[in-house]
Length: 316
Image 1 (cartoon, rainbow, N blue to C red):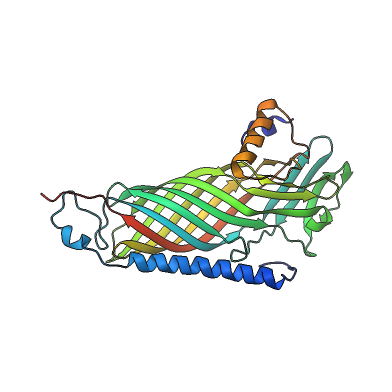
Image 2: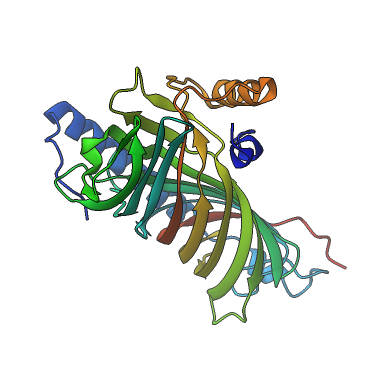
């Protein structure tokens, strides 16, 4: 196993689509409708009045209100749409395959099942500074149409042509049950404009994608949750503060370096897949079909809701 493989092994617009059966289309429509309806209901609940603004003048320290952000905890959820920059994909099986496909035009289908979504927990220690634990479930597909990309290296000991198609070498190449990113972020609010509260932040964390990579000629696919490396993100948003919660729109920039094992294994649940990966690393067992990865650099535009929890503060 190569040195960098041993180090990172630890815990590590749409092309042509096949028509979906009517039952799948109906199921997808129901899921999207339910998600939008749930978010709408929670936003309506956030708009219900309370008496926070009446107590703000007498509380010490000031409690958080729609017009005057202060100390509070928030739980939120969101939908959105990402754009992934083209990037190189690498597959390495020492002594057998060393393939690079240049500048693959990744695509996302954020409103196809499974949806692009995210959840977050925020804690504001004052009206200005806070922290956030953010989980994002994005998606990454490689195109399987007739688009050709520059290629270099070898596959199964044979040199590849200078140009080729993804489908010439793969039955599947995607991270679609999650280009999953978990990040811890620092936040800062800018001066509010009435009920509009601008904010920005940055953070770092880990990538836990659900990989589906199936190279032609391999006995089986790799289809499991994996730890594949670090992720970083920066964000800027506008929070529209209602009486007991908020709606928000946000731009996020994310950078994730993927390098994961090709085990040829159909996984199950996230904890079980993580245990298998840790056990393999601990024993020093190399992955059966090598290693694969890419750098995924993304712009993401999201919108969602926050439910606000304000600590009780005794009046003087």
